[in-house]
Image 1 (cartoon, rainbow, N blue to C red):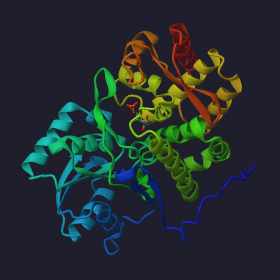
Image 2 (image 1 turned 30 degrees about the vertical axis):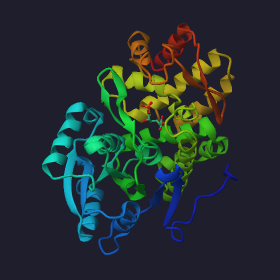
Image 3 (image 1 turned 90 degrees about the vertical axis):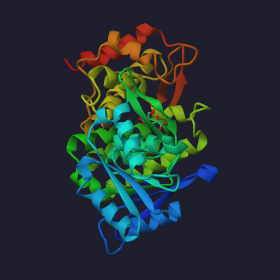
Length: 386
Ligand SMILES: O=C(O)C(=O)C[C@@H](O)[C@H](O)[C@H](O)COP(=O)(O)O
């Protein structure tokens, strides 16, 4: 059945679109393009960069080693042509790079290369590089301007937007960091053509999350379009990226620093997911894979708490499966996960709180969840994988 919902735009007539993240004097644009970073003759990136940051003569270009010879070198070329001096820092791919030692090494390179308060940090890569570089920008000399160039689906639709930056500790994901908004986000969907399938699919979890937490219409569209996304159909991808960024921008604009509780809805599935990632060992289960499993655990918990009926889990399962995401983790162990979950950033007065759905398109923060129900939810998604 074809969806009757808004159709993707025509990429020929609309090569670049923008979405604003409205945060008063910290507002910034998210540019979404397809293939516009390629050309040295038409320096679209450099032009948008200069409009966003104004005067700049030095950039610290922090990039994932995997994109060193592709989009990172195009970005560097365009900035050099604009007479900007570049200090290039390559980061090994993978979650283990979001560490204190990697951050310290970046700080030292910044110091040695004459980075000062007029310098701008440009992050080119996925969520790991964006979070790490963003925190380096937030902390070096107490704050440098910062631009995000996300190259993975997950970073395009989630981590590059909203200003959460930070690193992991062995006992907890994203435990040290700060809110530090970028000056602009530059998305070029062309990077997705070389992204390994596993990483691409991992990003689908955060896309589907928006449908469950606050956009039922988008969820309906995903029910018929998730498989076209997996095939990387360009128009379908652009549409899903735009809808996801609009969702994220909306929520962040309402609650930039997660103080009112509104922003916490973006953490749907993440209390379980972060515990899976930490107990499995960072990088063993990719973030989006853990979010998919965490969303399943959260849906089981919501049913057990009588917040919703089983049909929500069935619908969520169908879309996650169409996106080829994992639904369970064979090593999920409540005994190991619960201590990690007790350090979750949503814990209030020592009590765990969960973001749980009551219907597709709506979630709420729920406290006072009995531990035995949390254990059952974890076990439900372990048993399913046996
Ligand atoms: O931006 C947010 O807010 C989110 O919660 C989005 C999450 O998908 C993202 O993984 C985030 O980095 C998790 O943040 P944390 O505060 O739970 O560490």
